Image (cartoon, rainbow, N blue to C red; front, side, top):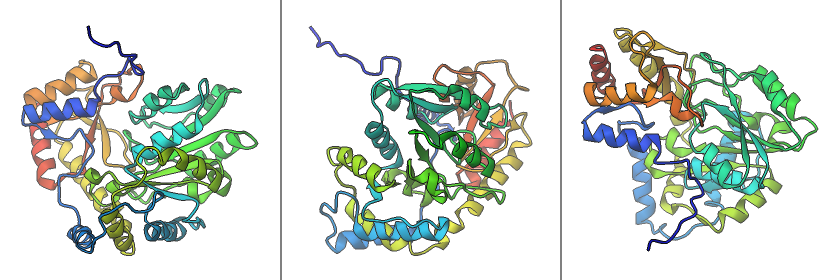
Length: 382
């Protein structure tokens, strides 16, 4: 007789990203679903990892991250956001940003706590909240611009509200927080015990002259926040699964208590390489313009199709409406694109806990020009 398992996530199956990517492989489709580049990363960074390995940097490094890397991150934060961060007490290197988010939520949440989550939302947020016995309080972003309704946020705040989840630039919509959003947030959390977990993995992937409104810019918000970042998104190496989080000393001390019994420490030679590579500011400063060119190229190519673009001001992604093409559900339409037209996308409904049908798909444009050209040409046949 098989052992009985108490499933902690009974309503959760395999992620949509895995499902679509497997189908893309099966049908030899161009994968514009999962968010990763299909072009080579910086060769110099690869050489720095190789150099670190050859120099013997292959054993455990400090639990909190290589001290030199944390120092360089603190210097970068000072340069970008004029925030003074102590690398010893306020920065921890993590095996990816999703890990940092998971650890932050596990650190701060207790059973019964309520967490404000804006939908559509990156798919790890809600399962992690529920694993910790907390309750996601779902607030829809305003379609089609995906703006936050701050009056609705105020209505949803209760004595049980423990946290607000933020994500800017936003996955999957490409929306970004404005200065007004920040001011509304500051007013809401002032004189409360509400924490903020801010997912800022696309901090440099921001377009059209927009400014990244990092929580790190605002001391009154930072004092209650854990802010999560990704090296993979900055240096085109998502498979390295390297990230970091930044938080005030008391919050970081609690975060590290959880971290020490999970990953403990991260890839050592990669940390040495990143510590050296971070000194080359141009590699992250030029990233937004470089990826914006891909967004613009894809938008130009897609103009020959019947899809309608929704605004994207950041991230790897742009949403497109197929309302002029089909009445199918988002999942059915996405599956038909993979199987019949050889293009993999992600239905935006997958980013809602209970699904929401706006006839919108998410496309990843962080690909080579050739990939985007072939994908768009296939989609003109719809």
